Length: 240
Image 1: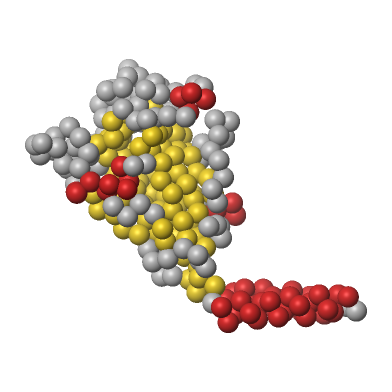
Image 2 (image 1 turned 90 degrees about the horizontal axis):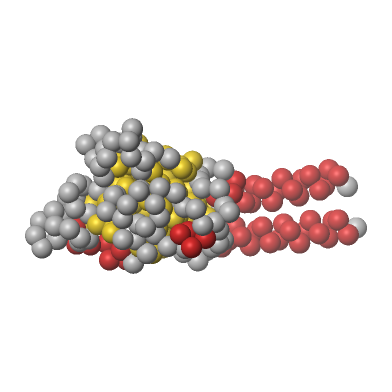
């Protein structure tokens, strides 16, 4: 009986492996920008110079205009003065309460199209401070991540926290958020929230080259039928 169960379980695992058609695309979603510091866009956001890349079978912001719509309560979200994004909010140097947590962030969601799932590996980007000496002025950011539409709460632990950024626009720091853990594998979607933290509204936190890496897995219908058949066979043997 135990041998039959083990054989059925092994067959199910083999079917699962056979059913997965893994895309070769390493980049699931990416957004970059050039310096838009050209009048009349010398102090604002220009979606026309934002380049968005997304893999097949993926839903995500597909243009600079869609990306701009993800700014919730930011004082500024713009792409001027350097080839990256600058964001500022009224959060101050920390998110201290639920009121602050409800505003002042950039958010975007990457999801798999129906019949597919995501296996993210990392979120990579470069980070910088818009100005100020890190020895005398604290500027940082928090980054949250949630899978499958789960809410992001004030009590959650950030996926990545930089208390006081040392990178500058001319020498940004390369950041990588590891998403290879089980919590983010085989998911339908993943949502990010980026909170800039700075002493005053005019002070910015900056980033460039935001890139979500990973794979899209597309189950094949024929193999899915085999899995269903294997499951029925397994149940029948257990009942005997």
